[in-house]
Length: 105
Image (cartoon, rainbow, N blue to C red; front, side, top):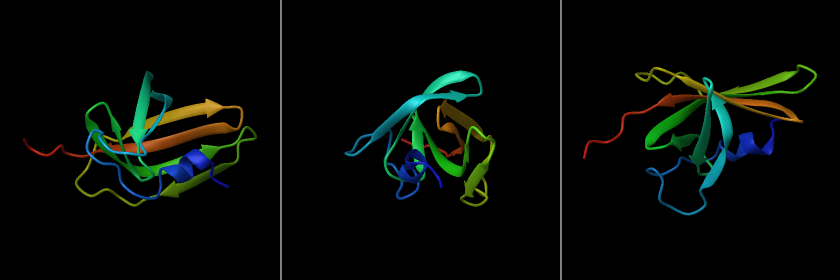
């Protein structure tokens, strides 16, 4: 069963970086060796700083090595995925984020 933090990221997208109500700040996550805070609403998009990301997949790995992955399909036209992980006594939660283009001002 996927942990609550995984389910919290699956429902609806976040808004621009990031005004709004109900935002969740998670972290620290290890994103390619850099300690990072992720801001999101209850949805499958998030922000790191001013950069908007969509979620490609989540994986939860328990301490005994069992893994469960939920994928959200190929993100056509998007590249340079970022993998971020957080470990606690319940296991390791990893999310693959794909950056989107920011709107032009």
